Length: 193
Image 1 (tube, rainbow, N blue to C red):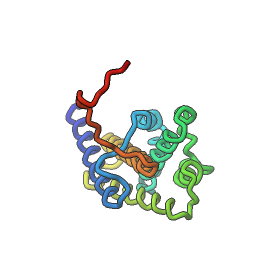
Image 2 (tube, one colour):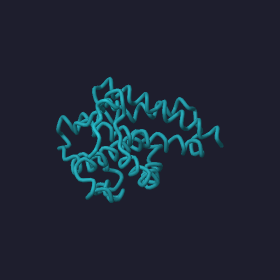
Image 3 (cartoon, rainbow, N blue to C red):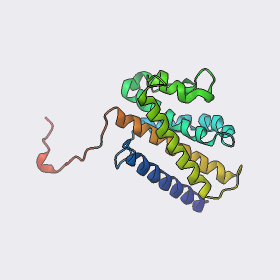
């Protein structure tokens, strides 16, 4: 069992690094993946429902099934920046469009990120998430996993987790967040009074 967990963790880390590298080359991310515990916790809450929606789509629309996790991450990052006190309790269903999971991407772009679907920004985001999803599908295929197995399920779950975190990181960066090194040496610190 421990061997399987290590395999899945190694797979997730390699995929995250590859997608980060690709997003960096496309100018969408820097060297680090921006994140927040609040945002990561939302994925833990939503993952079972997301996977239940996405799994039936994997055979026919694998890129879409994977990419929508990135859109979900973008939505949560937008809400986190906007007003987390108001949005932290948002349900997974709030990501669905009028056709449910089938138009989640358009609903998030148009109604949560507030971008017209035909705008250059929306098209850029859609292209980036499609490229990430295609990279992920290729990554999965290189694992040579038999379909509809426990291993396939776990690899899919790790893949959509990576996509969620990537989408959140992209949106955080677009909102202006950056990582800065902070020097906390004792000389520069002032005592609290």
